[in-house]
Structure formats: C-alpha cells, structure tokens
Image (tube, rainbow, N blue to C red; front, side, top):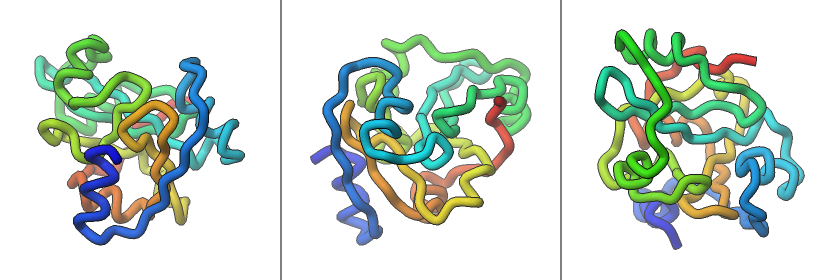
Length: 153
C-alpha cells in the first residue's frame, strides 16, 4: 500500500491498482507497454520549479511538458524542471514512482487537458511498478488540479 492508494481507499474513490515488474527505464512508457495500455492513457507526474516554488505537471507519457504552457497555467514567469532529489523530498515519493496523489504536501497541480477525452487515466501509484487507474474527474477533484494544454508533442 502507498499513501496514494490509501487516500483513494479512505475517500471511497473507485480505482484499480495495476502492478508490473519495473526495469527502471522510462517509467511511464514502461508502464504502458507492460500493462498493455496506450501511451495516451498513461500519464506521468513531473515536478517543476515555478518562480522558486514547486508545482506538479501531469501529462501523457508520449508527450513532453511545455514549460512555457506550464508557466502560463501557473501564472509564473519561469518554469524549469525540479532537481530530482528535491522533488523526491517535496513529494515523499521516489522518482519513477511520484504520484500526484497524497504527496507529503500537496503541490499546485496542472493536468494536461487531453485527459478530458479519457474515461480512465493511469497514473503512478506512488512506487515504481505500481499504476492507479481512476476517472479523470476523480483525479482532478482529489488534487484540486487545474486543467490546461501543457503537453507538447
């Protein structure tokens, strides 16, 4: 059990936990391949530094994060990728297993608007090799996310 799964259970949010053997490569793509999912339904969690404050971007694994679009979504002047060690400390999760749910301190979160086309989104469950499938609306509500077109490619 991870903090993300525990929070979903405590709140009675319908979800499924999927596991796979992680080789420690490109975690999001690895999850999609190992679980037989499309790259558009598996989303990765990225921690960014927005004007000196951490925030979270949730984008499809097949896409990259547009830092410019993320800055606009956060009303920030400058957004860069956060240092991995600092992102791990801020979220309480290990890189490759960072979930947007139940972080040590919930960071401002922006989810790519492409999620609206899905009935189910797959996100990291809080540990490498663990994915959570849930309704996009439940994810957005649970983390008080903003929707914005932040994915590129």
